[in-house]
Amino acid sequence: MQISAHKVRSAIGLAFAFGAALVIAIGSFEVSVDNRLRFRPGAPSELANANHPAAPRSQTLDTRFNPPVEYAHDEFGGRAATTTARYERARTVALVGDSFSYGDEREFPNTLQAKLADALDANVVNFARAGSCSAYFAETVTEFRKRYRKPIDVLVVGLFPDMEVGDLPRVLATRQEYGRITYRGLDMSPTAARALQESFWHRSLLGLEVSLRERSSTFNTLFPPRPSPAFAVSLRDTLTPAMFPDLLASILANLSALEASSEVPPNRTVIWFAASLHDAGKRDSEYIRLSDTLWSEVSSALRGRGYIVVDPRLDVGAGTDPFTRSGHYRPAAYEITARAVIPEVARILLDRHAAK
Image 1: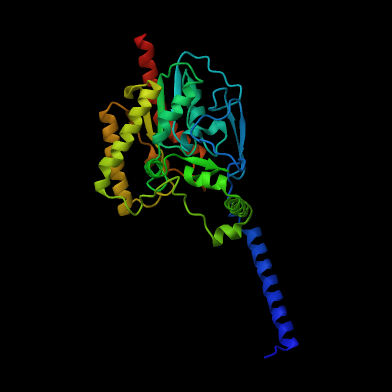
Image 2 (image 1 turned 90 degrees about the horizontal axis):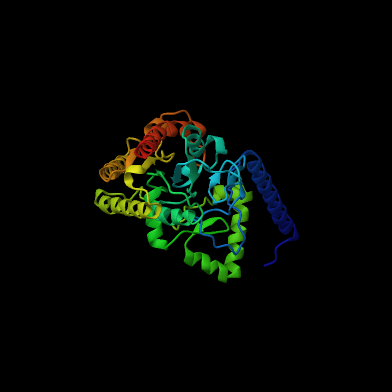
């Protein structure tokens, strides 16, 4: 059976028209919607431990956010006001935690670190690493203390109670993946990262996906990225009271390891809870009730061991637009957190001074 030339031309014309309409639609969508993703830069062969200090006296431009944010790191690799920050006071307060403690997406003056430094007569150093969790706190502090030799008087530890991507979901991920690795700025298991290093084909596919996600809102809308199981194991649909003892034991064990690595006892450790964008406006759900019950038990157990616990989450959540689109804190949320944390730290420093 022969197909007439007219039908062939018609089919070609329809295909061309469809293609042109598709290109116009995609172009219009790209112009009107910005759904592009941004990843931390890194060489294709990079296998970096994101929980160790940054390069001393380095500056990093974080292009994941709009506008991009520049972070300065001091001579010890911790976040600082400038790369030449000096710590000449007698006392030291050290921040430990994840992106909330590090100050992701915020210029330095709007971070918790800056507010502590302005209010306290002490060096305020930042041992936090974005994306970290309590499973890595002891290791991180150990690495920082190889560079920062002064004794630590007070620890200010940030915990993120979000049960989708917060501290405990990340702790569970470390159990499954045996460590958190970044490859080209992406979180994945060490096994997956090594497989990428050994396969040109898989590296090429990953490079193509990263390029599309950074440049195409259409691609991200049609094929939304899924959370990496190497980063966090969500408990939204699986959390039960039977899990509470194991989860609580994990946090207590991680903080005990932090106590050993920092040489700071619980009565000189202030732990604050960061509010979650995921939980905002969902206070009546069964999942939130379970989460609140668990973290109430965590708070009680921590206080029972002598830790100072402050929980400004409700005050932060009641504020006007406290979160960025990515879930980090806006300046007002850090103001609320600082008002809760500073009096406790100041009291410990005063007691330390009086004991001399």
